[in-house]
Image (cartoon, rainbow, N blue to C red; front, side, top):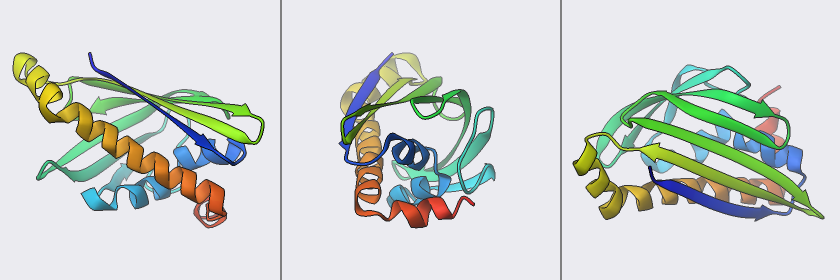
Length: 160
């Protein structure tokens, strides 16, 4: 099972980084290039423990849907989303946060299992692992930028 780990230092309070990471609105902004939209479940604001969101996006030239549920939650240090339905055999995304002085260290750990056994393993090797890594990296750069430049006030205000 491939595992991707990304660590992003952000000069912002841990609570802001945590909330931006679970913001449906910010997620949609960071994935505009895939035309990703929340189409069912929680479709705006902050997703909470036990809630689900269904995303529709164009990945690798094909529109796909994926339903994810928040399966663990400990504000403001950790939450986990787990795929309920989608193209993967399984997918679990751990979002971890720790404060180090003025920095919040945001760590994403994504574990996934591709379908189609050998064909899936070949896809992982050839392109899928890099594709998923880049998606998370783009999202994290947006979280970092919004948290550090003060735009978080507009994004999180959408949630009230």
